[in-house]
Amino acid sequence: MTPFLDALSLLLVYSAIAIYAAAFVAYTLHLARRASTPAVPVTARVPATAGATSTTDPDLAGTPTAPDTDTAPAAAAPGADGGAGKAARVGFALTVLGWVFHLAGVVLRGVAAVRVPWANMFEFSLTGTALIIATFLAASLRVRLAYLGSAVLGLTVLLLGVATVSFYVPVVPLMPALQSGWLVIHVLVALLATAFFGLAFLVSLTYLLTTRRRGLPSRLTRLRDSLPGPEDLDRLAYRLTIVGFILWTFTLIAGAIWAGRAWGRFWGWDVKEVWTFIIWVLYAGYLHATATRGWAGTRAAWLCIVGFAAVLFNFGVVNVFFTGLHSYSGL
Image 1: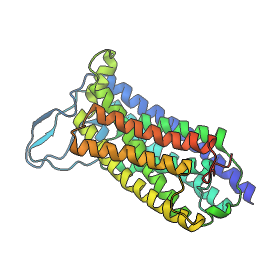
Image 2 (image 1 turned 135 degrees about the vertical axis):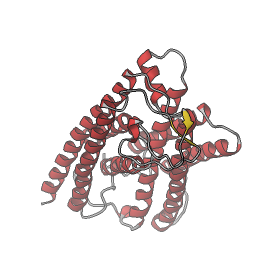
Image 3 (image 1 turned 90 degrees about the vertical axis):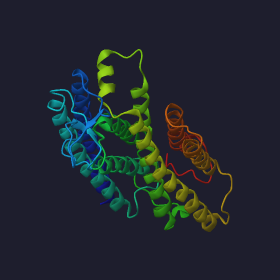
Image 4 (image 1 turned 30 degrees about the vertical axis):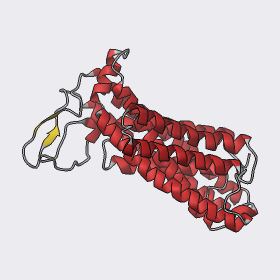
């Protein structure tokens, strides 16, 4: 039964990848249609009537906005919210459908293994990407994020593709060091932190596009002008990073407690422990520089990008090419 459930889980993951790829196409069409029509930047403001709550920005199609008694979003250019808004809605629906298949694949992998499905790099990739999509969908209900759809889905398809091709391993029992309730707490919180860091990374990349004023083709210039303003993107990246940083801090604490119970010491300068701490320092520096040194803007965006690059290095390089007490890749 275990091999059958494992094969069925893998089939569901492949199906999710296909649906995510279709969602990526839909979101890309959304961006292309926005870029094809000159639009008023969404940060432009005009006086609003009391209690105004709606917008014609296609990124907010079907999503309520909070009342603003002082200002309201300026109307987009004629035609900007027609096909573009429809493509965004299709992309969102496909993303939800793909996530259902994805989640089912993760659950079946756990059922096949009779444990939580995040004990090796393959399972970590499955669960981590599922949480990235879940975070994106949840945030999309409150914040206009259709402009991030192509990036989020593209990153997810890439990570899932690499996981199924390069990281797949059959279901195996847990090694003794992982047979602890702290596996659920420590790794789940790390996965959630990675999801928030990933979204902050994509928002920071978008910020850099909105601040580039020269050397862009006309279509990219129109696309840039239709995106949320740099200040809004900078603020969103900061808020996402705060949540991720809190979760990553708890990851460090939970890992130290687990290490104390498993190996009799809270810290041993293992390469995985060191890189986890480096990531914490990078994001702590980002938050400190932004809050106290005025590092809002381009410098903050680059520091956020460097932080997520360290997260990817920790996962894709440290786990595979370094040996230590945390060598749980399964490869």
